[in-house]
Image 1 (cartoon, rainbow, N blue to C red):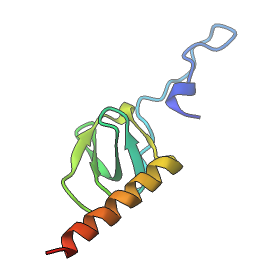
Image 2: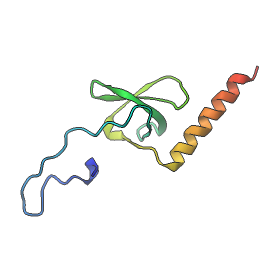
Image 3: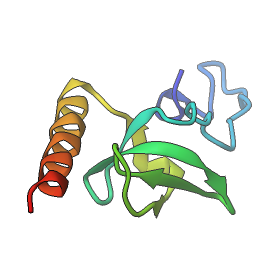
Image 4: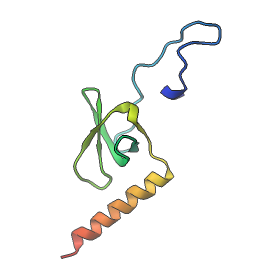
Length: 93
C-alpha cells in the first residue's frame, strides 16, 4: 500500500490510521523526483527532506518525500544513459 492508496475514512465511517511518513527507499535505490523530473540514487533523509544524487555521481539535491517515487524502467534507462554519457565526456581531452 502506498500513501496515495490510503483513505482516511473506512467504508463504515471509522477513521483508519494514516501513515505520517513514506517508507524510506534503500540507500542506492534509483528514484524519480517528480518536482525536478530528475532520476537519482537515494542517499538518505535529513530534516524531513530526502537526499538524492545523480546515478554515477554528481551534486546531491534535496527532494520532498511526497514528490519522490520509485524509478520505472524508462527512468532506469535514462539514468544509465546519463551515467554513460558523463563517463564518455570525462575520457575525452
